[in-house]
Length: 429
Ligand code: HSE
Image (cartoon, rainbow, N blue to C red; front, side, top):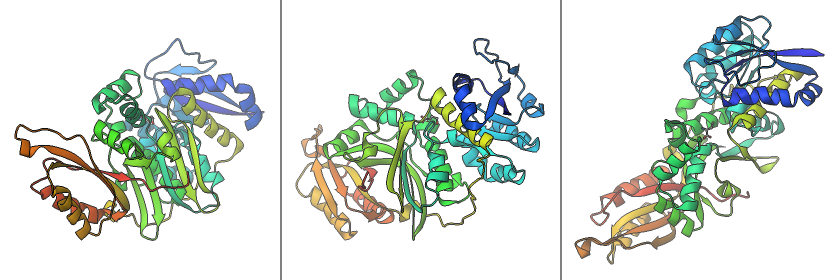
């Protein structure tokens, strides 16, 4: 039987998951791949004597993996950008295949690295970079290869979803929910990438690229995170039959390709609205299949290892042909998307104020779907008592909504910043 010899870089949660899965399922993996997949070398900054390396040689020097002629494929599980980027470049020069979970690296440097690997007929596997254990790239690359995809919408950052779920179920404010996510080890010590949408934008860059055959272009993704979402917005949205989720969305239509991550109100009945905690889920709309949905753990040692080992088996089987990422499609500016909106307008509580707001929306051609006012707030001066006015609008061009909001914000009776959150359109799933 053939052998595939692996050099594993990194002994953190993911590296340990790969070792343990390859050991635990060695028999079925070799049966299914027709190959013995063996970790022959491990490199990690710190030695971890408690980890069973089997027969692998350990080293604290990453370059040892690249310099070892017996290594066929490098599994990169160190994350980050700098060390991983130089490892990728030198591994490609040394003609090693690469498998990684590093979404930042693929999303931001894939445009350089993927062609470099292809020129040398090397395999670059990055299934684990998107949605952890959900084999979503395989779905796009293989299962749906005969379909034209029109839309992807997904919950692809588990930390944000955990925070929004805690805010919704326990009524926590954002800071409390974030602290809980950190205490449980979900959010990083510096959680910026998770809560400001960067991690989701990395993953969406990769999915959009495979779905539409376009080069990876992280810089063109529109990004908003969840740090401005308040517990009261979650409550008001819930009263109106919606959950607030952080979504990665890409759509392709005659106006071009829109790739964006932002919070959105999702109708209660939609499957995405009911994906809770750290779970990830991706919904795809395509012409032949229609709407389909994929859900599972988006992080963690064994789920991520599941995707990495799947890539190793693909390599062993010779299933390594890459999707050409060569299409040039115009990217839509966020101002040109069409969406419904949730608005929370803090306004003085007296007759005529709602009419002023409605008048501005009407002048801009914006139709109101629902309106309600909540929780009268008292002021020291009673005539300055105010109330959050909640409005759900009909579909409108974002540019038009922005113009209307500028006018509403200027009204003397509007006493604070208006909150604005997009509303995801209803769909079949
Ligand atoms: N930090 C990511 C998340 C997991 O919270 O989903 C790894 O991509």
